[in-house]
Image (cartoon, rainbow over all chains, first blue to last red):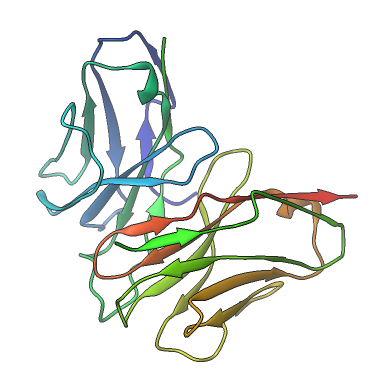
Length: 117
Length: 112
């Protein structure tokens, strides 16, 4: 158990709908990262938040957005869903910003499996 | 942009034997970290081993070791005495100044 929790575990919805995925980082971790893993593919970085502020952006679609709240939990909002959005969405947390001067391990949650029908 | 390539989509090994998974990466950065993650059927991402680019000594963690060739930008994972529980997808990953970049993965099967 990494200490990172994600809800829900599974989500089934229809095209055009909107969903919200939730992540609670490890106690004390300030950074939260979101990743998308399509079937049998590697993880694609979507976005990072640090202490409530957006720190880095990856290949995140405009239909997707995220935020980190004062209690440090984060939500990933996916709207106007398409079939191709079906994937496993991971959240990870780490203690601080990505700093090259020190190793900074990311701890992954169990993921949320999204199925768009 | 940094890229990570795993050229072996699938590998198999007999239980108790040794297997090596390949990974190459491309970067212009001089300071970075490299990782191997294991993803079993449960889909949990588990860190197996990490290597700091400034260290010449190859990292080892019990039965897992790496062969880090910085000039060749190669980072292979060796699993010794393979066990049935080692069956999983293995992802090589690179972290430089920005995000964590993953390879496409190698599916490892352990034959009893």
